[in-house]
Image 1 (tube, one colour):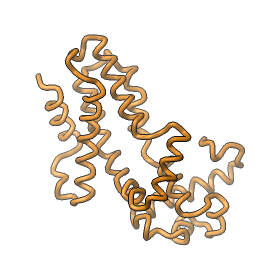
Image 2 (cartoon, one colour):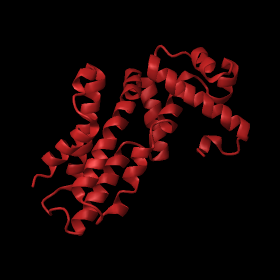
Image 3 (spheres, helix red, strand yellow):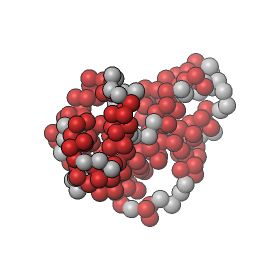
Image 4 (tube, rainbow, N blue to C red):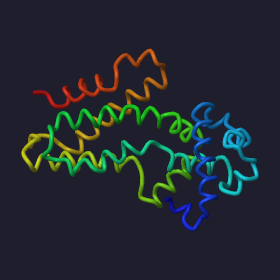
Length: 206
């Protein structure tokens, strides 16, 4: 349960969830600029008045979608990675990270584009991240922590720089996701697994 739903009745929570689900779908399909609260309310099966009982405006709804409707499996995967240090192989675990990162960033790209297109909206999003302590830096930190754990176990060379390696891995995934979303599907000439193998082979040469 998010802080926003603490003390809220189950019925109200259900309504809020349906509105968020509809907003995520409509905004992904239409873009933030063309998505209207009327269309979102209709997709959720409610009136606009009901929508405004839960959210101040379309921007508030968008920011909540950014916080609560982004895929969480990738974030959770990274959070638990340090506990897997010493298991499997570093190469395979990093391939898993890269293969999960690519679709995550592709889902994220349209929402980031909408936020960057509106400075006021971006400022509100940044303020929310600052207040909660959340943000993309947590992904980098979690991956770097895992790499440091492997380094302590002697499974990653001492010459490796965990923070830089984490940034290179996630940065490459983000760039590929951005280019595919920006230039078109014709650039998506590899599966996520194939891209991950090639990337990790380059970052961890034999």
